[in-house]
Amino acid sequence: MFDVKAIEKFEKRRNGSILEIEKNLYNAIFDDYNDLVNISKNSQLVIDTKSDFLSKKLGFSAEHISSYGIYNGEILINKTFDAVFSINNMHKINNIRKYLENVKLILNENGVFFGTMLAGDNIISLCNAFYKAYQEHNLGFVNHFLPVVDIKQVGSLMQSIGFRNVVVSAMSHKVEYRDIFDAISEIRLLSEQNCMEKRDKRPILRKVIRSADEFFEKNVEYNIVSIFAQK
Image (cartoon, rainbow, N blue to C red; front, side, top):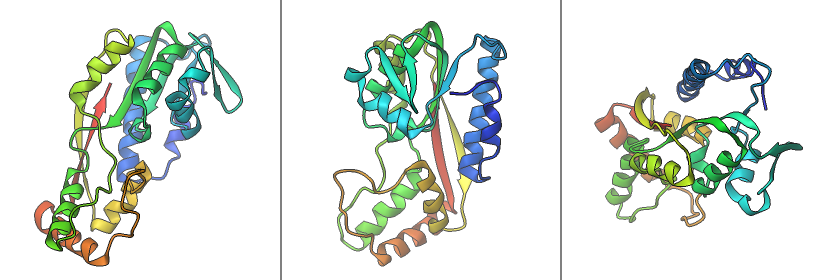
Protein backbone atom coordinates (compact mmCIF):
# COMPACT_ATOMS: atom_id res chain seq x y z
CA MET A 1 0.00 0.00 0.00
CA PHE A 2 1.20 3.51 -0.57
CA ASP A 3 0.26 7.12 0.01
CA VAL A 4 0.57 10.25 -2.09
CA LYS A 5 4.36 9.96 -2.20
CA ALA A 6 4.25 6.51 -3.74
CA ILE A 7 5.11 7.73 -7.22
CA GLU A 8 8.58 8.66 -5.99
CA LYS A 9 9.68 5.04 -5.77
CA PHE A 10 8.94 4.51 -9.45
CA GLU A 11 11.23 7.39 -10.36
CA LYS A 12 14.12 5.41 -8.87
CA ARG A 13 13.70 2.47 -11.25
CA ARG A 14 16.46 1.52 -13.65
CA ASN A 15 16.28 3.60 -16.80
CA GLY A 16 15.44 1.49 -19.84
CA SER A 17 13.12 1.66 -22.78
CA ILE A 18 10.41 -0.67 -21.48
CA LEU A 19 10.72 0.52 -17.89
CA GLU A 20 10.68 4.09 -19.12
CA ILE A 21 7.36 3.36 -20.84
CA GLU A 22 6.11 1.82 -17.62
CA LYS A 23 7.10 4.88 -15.61
CA ASN A 24 5.33 7.12 -18.10
CA LEU A 25 2.22 4.96 -17.77
CA TYR A 26 2.31 5.42 -14.00
CA ASN A 27 2.59 9.17 -14.38
CA ALA A 28 -0.24 9.32 -16.91
CA ILE A 29 -2.54 7.17 -14.81
CA PHE A 30 -1.84 9.15 -11.66
CA ASP A 31 -2.68 12.31 -13.60
CA ASP A 32 -5.98 10.74 -14.66
CA TYR A 33 -6.68 9.75 -11.07
CA ASN A 34 -5.95 13.25 -9.82
CA ASP A 35 -8.51 14.55 -12.30
CA LEU A 36 -11.16 12.41 -10.61
CA VAL A 37 -10.32 12.78 -6.94
CA ASN A 38 -7.93 14.69 -4.73
CA ILE A 39 -5.35 12.02 -3.91
CA SER A 40 -3.75 14.30 -1.30
CA LYS A 41 -6.67 13.81 1.05
CA ASN A 42 -5.91 11.50 3.93
CA SER A 43 -9.20 9.72 3.33
CA GLN A 44 -7.96 8.32 0.03
CA LEU A 45 -6.76 4.73 0.39
CA VAL A 46 -4.94 3.38 -2.66
CA ILE A 47 -3.22 0.10 -3.47
CA ASP A 48 -0.81 -0.88 -6.22
CA THR A 49 -0.88 -4.55 -7.27
CA LYS A 50 2.55 -4.60 -8.88
CA SER A 51 3.71 -6.95 -6.12
CA ASP A 52 3.82 -10.54 -7.35
CA PHE A 53 2.59 -11.72 -3.95
CA LEU A 54 -0.57 -9.67 -4.09
CA SER A 55 -1.18 -10.55 -7.73
CA LYS A 56 -1.06 -14.24 -6.92
CA LYS A 57 -3.41 -13.78 -3.98
CA LEU A 58 -5.90 -11.88 -6.08
CA GLY A 59 -5.43 -14.15 -9.07
CA PHE A 60 -5.62 -17.58 -7.52
CA SER A 61 -7.32 -17.44 -4.11
CA ALA A 62 -10.81 -16.08 -4.68
CA GLU A 63 -12.51 -18.79 -2.63
CA HIS A 64 -10.24 -18.04 0.32
CA ILE A 65 -10.60 -14.27 0.43
CA SER A 66 -14.33 -13.70 0.14
CA SER A 67 -14.00 -11.24 3.01
CA TYR A 68 -10.30 -10.51 3.21
CA GLY A 69 -7.13 -10.58 1.16
CA ILE A 70 -3.58 -10.69 2.46
CA TYR A 71 -0.80 -8.35 1.38
CA ASN A 72 2.48 -8.59 3.27
CA GLY A 73 0.60 -9.24 6.50
CA GLU A 74 -1.90 -6.44 5.91
CA ILE A 75 -5.62 -7.11 5.76
CA LEU A 76 -7.43 -6.16 2.57
CA ILE A 77 -10.99 -5.65 3.73
CA ASN A 78 -13.77 -5.69 1.18
CA LYS A 79 -14.95 -2.30 -0.10
CA THR A 80 -11.96 -0.52 1.43
CA PHE A 81 -9.92 1.03 -1.36
CA ASP A 82 -10.69 4.15 -3.34
CA ALA A 83 -8.40 3.10 -6.18
CA VAL A 84 -6.45 0.08 -7.38
CA PHE A 85 -3.55 0.36 -9.81
CA SER A 86 -2.20 -2.52 -11.90
CA ILE A 87 0.58 -1.59 -14.32
CA ASN A 88 1.86 -4.32 -16.67
CA ASN A 89 1.55 -7.27 -14.32
CA MET A 90 -1.72 -8.88 -15.44
CA HIS A 91 -0.12 -10.57 -18.45
CA LYS A 92 1.61 -13.06 -16.13
CA ILE A 93 -1.52 -13.98 -14.15
CA ASN A 94 -3.17 -17.21 -15.24
CA ASN A 95 -6.69 -16.31 -14.13
CA ILE A 96 -7.25 -12.68 -15.09
CA ARG A 97 -11.00 -12.88 -14.52
CA LYS A 98 -10.56 -14.06 -10.92
CA TYR A 99 -7.96 -11.36 -10.36
CA LEU A 100 -10.35 -8.65 -11.57
CA GLU A 101 -13.21 -10.10 -9.51
CA ASN A 102 -11.10 -9.74 -6.37
CA VAL A 103 -10.01 -6.24 -7.34
CA LYS A 104 -13.69 -5.34 -7.46
CA LEU A 105 -14.22 -6.91 -4.03
CA ILE A 106 -11.76 -4.58 -2.32
CA LEU A 107 -12.91 -1.43 -4.13
CA ASN A 108 -15.35 1.00 -2.58
CA GLU A 109 -18.72 1.43 -4.27
CA ASN A 110 -17.36 4.37 -6.26
CA GLY A 111 -13.78 3.09 -6.38
CA VAL A 112 -11.67 3.27 -9.52
CA PHE A 113 -9.46 0.64 -11.16
CA PHE A 114 -6.64 1.73 -13.43
CA GLY A 115 -4.64 -0.89 -15.30
CA THR A 116 -2.41 -1.51 -18.28
CA MET A 117 -1.48 -4.85 -19.77
CA LEU A 118 0.39 -6.30 -22.69
CA ALA A 119 -2.07 -7.24 -25.40
CA GLY A 120 -2.77 -7.33 -29.11
CA ASP A 121 0.33 -7.62 -31.30
CA ASN A 122 2.79 -7.24 -28.45
CA ILE A 123 6.38 -8.01 -29.55
CA ILE A 124 4.96 -9.56 -32.72
CA SER A 125 8.21 -8.87 -34.59
CA LEU A 126 10.21 -11.00 -32.19
CA CYS A 127 7.63 -13.79 -32.29
CA ASN A 128 7.71 -13.83 -36.09
CA ALA A 129 11.51 -13.92 -36.10
CA PHE A 130 11.58 -17.11 -34.02
CA TYR A 131 8.75 -18.63 -36.05
CA LYS A 132 10.71 -18.13 -39.30
CA ALA A 133 13.91 -19.43 -37.68
CA TYR A 134 12.27 -22.70 -36.61
CA GLN A 135 10.81 -23.11 -40.10
CA GLU A 136 14.18 -22.52 -41.72
CA HIS A 137 15.71 -25.41 -39.79
CA ASN A 138 12.65 -27.68 -40.12
CA LEU A 139 12.23 -27.86 -36.35
CA GLY A 140 8.50 -27.25 -36.22
CA PHE A 141 7.64 -24.43 -33.85
CA VAL A 142 7.93 -23.96 -30.11
CA ASN A 143 6.14 -21.04 -28.51
CA HIS A 144 8.45 -19.12 -26.19
CA PHE A 145 6.09 -16.26 -25.41
CA LEU A 146 3.08 -16.03 -23.14
CA PRO A 147 -0.29 -15.65 -24.87
CA VAL A 148 -1.74 -12.15 -24.90
CA VAL A 149 -5.22 -10.79 -24.34
CA ASP A 150 -7.45 -9.66 -27.19
CA ILE A 151 -8.12 -6.00 -26.49
CA LYS A 152 -11.62 -6.33 -27.94
CA GLN A 153 -12.56 -8.71 -25.11
CA VAL A 154 -11.35 -6.58 -22.21
CA GLY A 155 -14.37 -4.27 -22.04
CA SER A 156 -16.97 -7.04 -22.09
CA LEU A 157 -14.96 -9.04 -19.54
CA MET A 158 -14.89 -6.18 -17.04
CA GLN A 159 -18.56 -5.38 -17.56
CA SER A 160 -19.50 -9.01 -16.95
CA ILE A 161 -17.64 -8.82 -13.61
CA GLY A 162 -19.62 -5.76 -12.61
CA PHE A 163 -17.35 -2.81 -13.39
CA ARG A 164 -19.26 0.25 -14.55
CA ASN A 165 -18.21 2.99 -16.97
CA VAL A 166 -15.44 0.87 -18.47
CA VAL A 167 -13.07 2.72 -20.80
CA VAL A 168 -10.60 0.72 -22.91
CA SER A 169 -7.98 2.19 -25.21
CA ALA A 170 -4.82 0.92 -26.89
CA MET A 171 -1.52 2.59 -27.68
CA SER A 172 1.60 1.40 -29.47
CA HIS A 173 5.18 1.95 -28.38
CA LYS A 174 8.04 1.30 -30.80
CA VAL A 175 11.24 0.33 -29.04
CA GLU A 176 14.58 -0.06 -30.82
CA TYR A 177 17.27 -2.59 -29.89
CA ARG A 178 20.78 -3.25 -31.15
CA ASP A 179 20.22 -6.97 -31.63
CA ILE A 180 17.90 -9.78 -30.68
CA PHE A 181 19.85 -10.56 -27.52
CA ASP A 182 19.42 -7.01 -26.26
CA ALA A 183 15.69 -7.29 -26.95
CA ILE A 184 15.31 -10.63 -25.18
CA SER A 185 17.23 -9.38 -22.15
CA GLU A 186 14.87 -6.48 -21.57
CA ILE A 187 11.70 -8.36 -22.45
CA ARG A 188 12.53 -10.80 -19.65
CA LEU A 189 11.95 -7.90 -17.26
CA LEU A 190 8.28 -8.21 -18.22
CA SER A 191 8.31 -11.96 -17.48
CA GLU A 192 8.04 -12.65 -21.21
CA GLN A 193 10.09 -15.81 -21.29
CA ASN A 194 9.78 -19.56 -21.70
CA CYS A 195 7.87 -20.09 -18.47
CA MET A 196 4.69 -21.77 -19.71
CA GLU A 197 3.70 -25.11 -18.21
CA LYS A 198 3.29 -26.84 -21.58
CA ARG A 199 6.53 -26.11 -23.36
CA ASP A 200 9.58 -27.71 -24.87
CA LYS A 201 12.05 -27.51 -22.00
CA ARG A 202 15.08 -28.01 -24.19
CA PRO A 203 17.27 -24.91 -24.65
CA ILE A 204 16.89 -22.92 -27.86
CA LEU A 205 19.52 -24.05 -30.36
CA ARG A 206 22.21 -21.53 -31.20
CA LYS A 207 21.46 -21.82 -34.92
CA VAL A 208 17.83 -20.90 -34.25
CA ILE A 209 18.83 -17.77 -32.36
CA ARG A 210 21.26 -16.79 -35.12
CA SER A 211 18.61 -17.26 -37.80
CA ALA A 212 16.09 -15.29 -35.76
CA ASP A 213 18.61 -12.50 -35.31
CA GLU A 214 19.30 -12.39 -39.05
CA PHE A 215 15.59 -12.25 -39.83
CA PHE A 216 15.10 -9.62 -37.18
CA GLU A 217 17.87 -7.43 -38.58
CA LYS A 218 16.76 -7.83 -42.20
CA ASN A 219 13.04 -7.36 -41.80
CA VAL A 220 12.28 -5.22 -38.78
CA GLU A 221 15.39 -3.07 -38.36
CA TYR A 222 15.53 -3.89 -34.67
CA ASN A 223 12.19 -2.30 -33.99
CA ILE A 224 9.92 -4.19 -31.62
CA VAL A 225 6.38 -2.93 -31.37
CA SER A 226 4.80 -3.32 -27.94
CA ILE A 227 1.06 -2.71 -27.71
CA PHE A 228 -0.46 -1.90 -24.33
CA ALA A 229 -4.16 -2.07 -23.59
CA GLN A 230 -4.96 0.67 -21.10
CA LYS A 231 -8.18 0.28 -19.12
